[in-house]
Image (cartoon, rainbow, N blue to C red; front, side, top):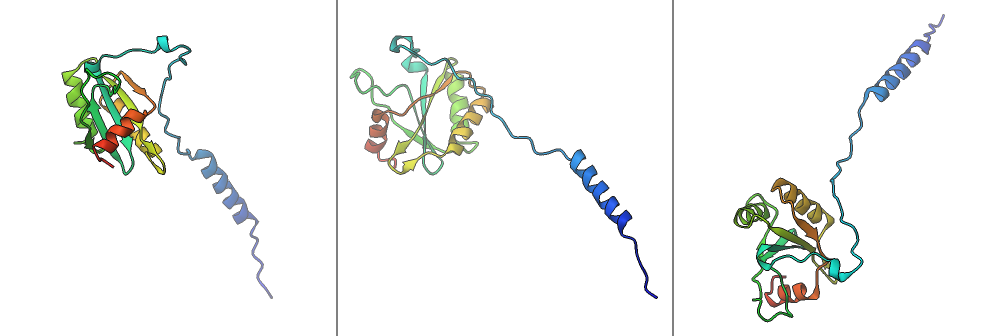
Amino acid sequence: MSTKIDMTPMVDLAFLLLTFFMLTTTFAKPNVLQLQMPAKVKDDLEKTKIKESEAMTVILAPDDKVFYYFGLNSPNDPSVAVPKIEVTDFSANGIRKVLLIRKQQVPKLTILIKTYEDGDQHAKYKDLVDILDEMNITDQKRYALVEMGKEDLDLIKKQKLL
């Protein structure tokens, strides 16, 4: 004589548990960064001019380096001194400290964020997200993502930072 075990109730229970856990589980929600982009400028005359004394340029470089200088780099204007580029990182004593100190010194600070690109060397997407997070943490209201020009690349090479 053999024993026969009916497995139907156990299969039903397994599917009920599976259904229960699938319906009650919350999936990880993606983190979204709120970013409002301005309208596209049609004419060069419409571009916003900023004062040299109220500008700070941040250049995102390879290897999680951050270059920054105060003012604007305008090589065509001989009356403007060539800025000295400083190097820092994304630590709490790095760019965050610089931003907080500069914000206290210049209340209407405008930060120009540029990404380094030269051949196969370029900044990472993570660095751009990190600097945008720093803008939110330090409560910077005026910043812009700007294309890096040849004059900035020449300035970095001249000061032998990379």
